[in-house]
Image 1: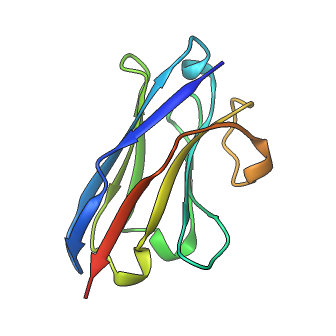
Image 2: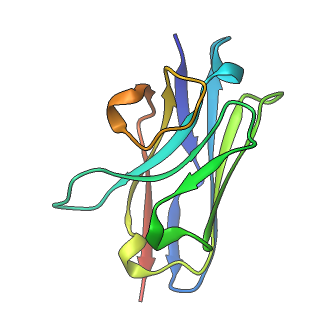
Image 3: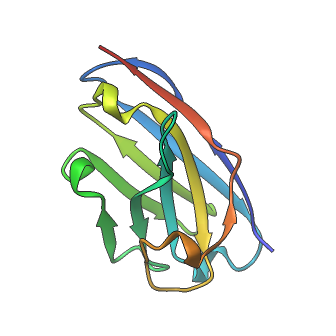
Length: 124
């Protein structure tokens, strides 16, 4: 069992930065790939970024590549999402998720555990 708690969301102006954190409990964290997803009002939840269990491999949604960076600290059971050059279209509730697999995946169905979400609002 893995429990996930996100933090770091908030209101920021376009062009600004935010760093989201996701603290995980449970001994399987260090062997699980982790991901970030987001859901904007009236839209489906979408994949944002994923990282393998070791942190060596990462994958990003095309529209955030070069602006967002996913990382993890297995010693602290924490995964991060550094977001820069934020745009109003990045406004959404951001969710952290833990995969049942060690290899990273963009497929939502492969994620077994989810956090409660943190709101990110980017004003123009």
